[in-house]
Image (cartoon, rainbow, N blue to C red):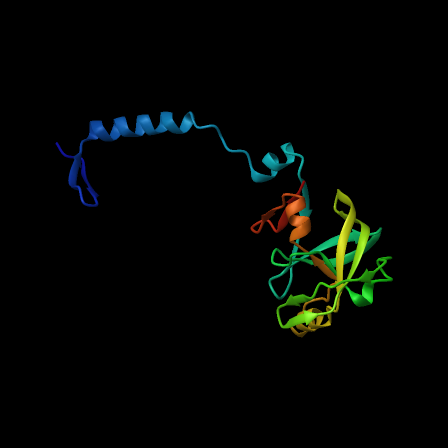
Length: 182
């Protein structure tokens, strides 16, 4: 006596009996019970010594992050597309940066071939994560802040770039609006 019909692509029709259906559910339940439960991403990363850092989604759909450079707190954009961590020229004294000439030319959305300076031997703290001897690229971020403020977002002091994200083996959890750094 047929219980129901299960249609499978390219195979045709298979008649499933009550006995077959019950057996299937018993086997499937046994299978599920034997799969180790996957811990949450946060628990898994904490076991691996990662630090959880909150992110703030801006009006422009960028993630803002708080960080300290040389002990001074600032507001930054987390930018996976920026190769280097950057600070605006007008924040050199604010973050106690020393600068030297650089042959690097910066480019970004809306601007190319921009002059830069380089600052070495800086300390950075993002939450409980810390690093010494960070190189920071210095350049004019006026165009970035104009774009942000024109969309009613707050201006930033700089950009946390891929150099930090790669160094820390960063994991971004977009759903929970946080980043994990190691």
